[in-house]
Image 1 (tube, rainbow, N blue to C red):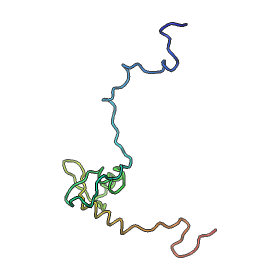
Image 2: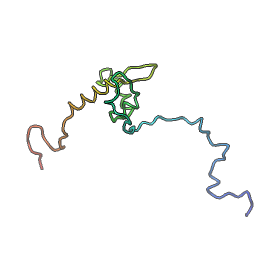
Image 3: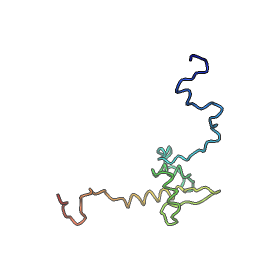
Image 4: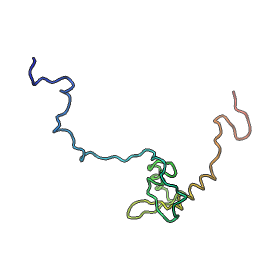
Length: 122
């Protein structure tokens, strides 16, 4: 069989171009990964300016999904407000949060260390 209608095994599995889904109907998904580091210096911004959740996530090096979860807790130390239905973070609030985190961070202990001075068992 050497006709023009023969298809290679790989070509037979492909969908016809007319049946492929157009790009406009595909559902776009949110990028939930870590954003790249901020391209601006937060110390040079005026304290009353607002940051989007993606910009705030880039400054504090967390994912936007983490900020979304934090917004569910009204007592979370990173404060936000909704403007036109979008969560925005004041630069002052982000600076305060970073300063508070610097004060409360502890040096990591090895897993086998005891707080009471005992040595780990062999």
